Image 1 (cartoon, rainbow, N blue to C red):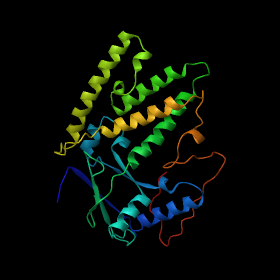
Image 2 (cartoon, rainbow, N blue to C red):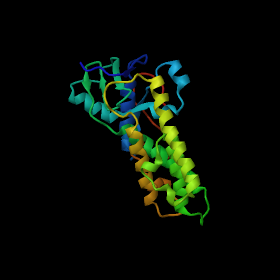
Image 3 (cartoon, rainbow, N blue to C red):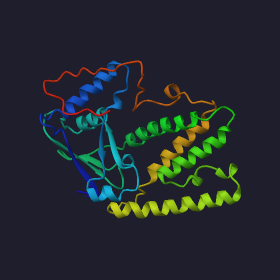
Image 4 (tube, rainbow, N blue to C red):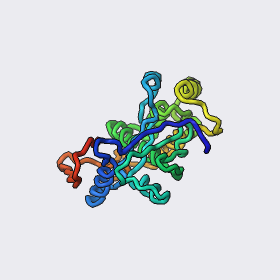
Length: 264
């Protein structure tokens, strides 16, 4: 009734139509082990053609919709949709506004969700914490943070000067060069995006979530006063969980059919 530029996916379409049931069993099993069931999720990459993939200048994860099993289950139940009926179902998500999405086997719009931001938030914190922890004691923490913010801003293609006063850490000339660099980066980001994706008439900023994510990461590192970040205790793990090298994880999924594929 209100079409928008979108990508459509099918799921539960493995040979035995038990994909969703298997993932739900895994989610429930992890919960019994004290691991967040939100760490089991669907990942729908919004790059759907080879030409789009060839033209993509960024990591695919920045163009992927994440949806936890419990989230999609709850939304489906409220809409009277049974995802465990061994039928193929369809999922649509908008290129421009990821919160505009639906399960199309019985059409209903999913509620707004920050799952994709939360997943990336935890992954990015772990990666940047490893980077920060490699520096010895005595290195100025504020300068380290400023370097991290520049790395993240370049990765997300956002302008860090909208959020962080980096001029406190860099000489004016160098600071001007950085400002001009990020200004060009943001301009090129929009050009590259619309060369791949259809430009909708929604009046929404498809990059707003990146700026929100950048600000969340900045807030985390500003709040850290320790020389080293304890990744297991300081970083949230609601959508991810820490693997202990000394512990073996076994998932005994009870299903009458062969499991098609599990990805970790």
